[in-house]
Image 1 (cartoon, rainbow, N blue to C red):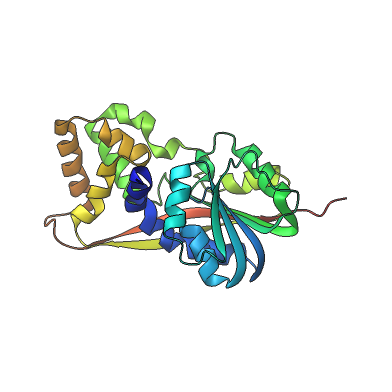
Image 2 (image 1 turned 45 degrees about the vertical axis):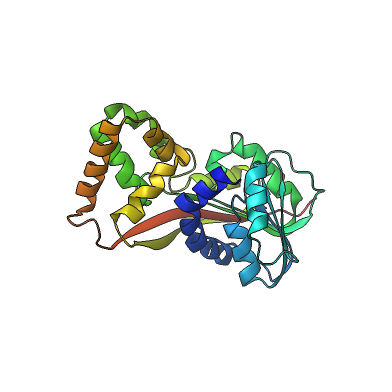
Length: 263
């Protein structure tokens, strides 16, 4: 029923559950009022907000009905958290509806992220916070950096698909976007986490479910290229025994800004 949502949860869910609480803390979400989670996916950020801020009402929007229904199916606090389908570029809410808007690992995938930011600013009350986080694909997100460096080694044509080319993933880019978008008191900082894997398979197998640019690349690779890539990844991680545990660092860039007062 939830094929893509379950695949995404397997690929990125545990990362989101680690990163979400750090974004909530960085954004300075208040303990009361309404909060909008833009691009809520499988619900990790919404649940983090509800867990840390016990008197907040949280609404998550996502363009995928499947993701919305999946998040609803695992919602532990339906009295305070809800999900609905929606387009970040055209929000249905009146001006100043929310005390805060947050977005986790989504903004760089929105086709017109400037319009999405303008909408987030519009629906945030004056003095409220707009915040987002995006992976540092070029260096800091080691899970994906090792994958793409290995892919380019095995297949030079993969270079054009490397996620390091994605927008907003380098230091200063989110901050500049927020300033251009008219937010005030803008600040950016790295959010660092460590992911523990029980084995190499625990690291590698989630790539096989076809999620994100890396999963799409692997899905379209033949068996020979997949095996060569798998071995190159192992070499780069220094893995001699596949059943040993490993730890990888990951960095996201986070930004926050304040919606200006009108007039």
